[in-house]
Image 1 (tube, rainbow, N blue to C red):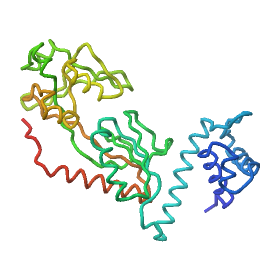
Image 2 (image 1 turned 135 degrees about the horizontal axis):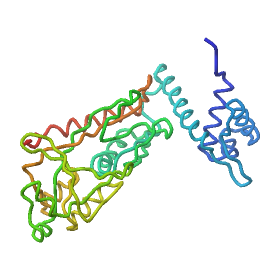
Image 3 (image 1 turned 180 degrees about the vertical axis):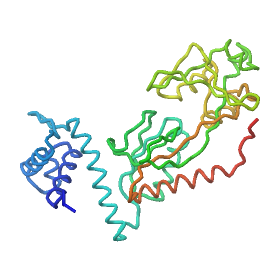
Image 4 (image 1 turned 180 degrees about the horizontal axis):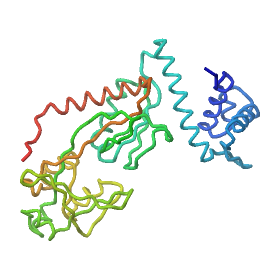
Length: 313
């Protein structure tokens, strides 16, 4: 096999990543015990090899170019894999450590994932956790994430998907709203109500509400005077303040239902759910910090399933 990378090349990749992370050649040089000129020459050789500019240089600062950002994400992941592979083979990493980067939707993040992180770090204090709480789909390779929670498991064969739960959907409104507008008894009654809409930020498409009627799963388009995008929790907040009816995950509104701030409506047509999945890249050597978190989260979800599920009509 012809060698594509020698020790000098691997060292160049490490210095390039260091310069990207430290925000400049001088900071990288100080950290590595080299001169800024040595770091600059190393990056220049790398750029010449690739035939692209990795950094945009001005008199005041340097920053990664678009190509540099993509290359950094790939190099960072590759170097981490090399370190993890060495530790795996040599048995050096007994204690999980390092930076764990997770992306999660706002709903699952606030009501499921974030509350568990203090316990996780209490068990594994050498793991630092960085959480990206957003409904935007991230690119594992380009953005350097270790794990992501998503509603749908993608068809991407490079990702492993672990099912976390099927989150039940419920229709809710405040007692005051229902006194003013009346409580719907049939799905057709929703046409006379303010149904709070959620629009997908990627397409602007309004998500239809999900119901079960006469044993059949149906999707029902609704309309109303309010629409939210990007953050589903905005719809739940509007519903709590009497703006209308909203279809939310039960785990988001269960305390409101228990305390009477919200009331479940059209319960006979409920029982639908959306799945949440934990995704991570399919690697030959999955980092110990990633395996540790996957095991931790799955054990919590299994414990959460111990309670009997709500009967499905």
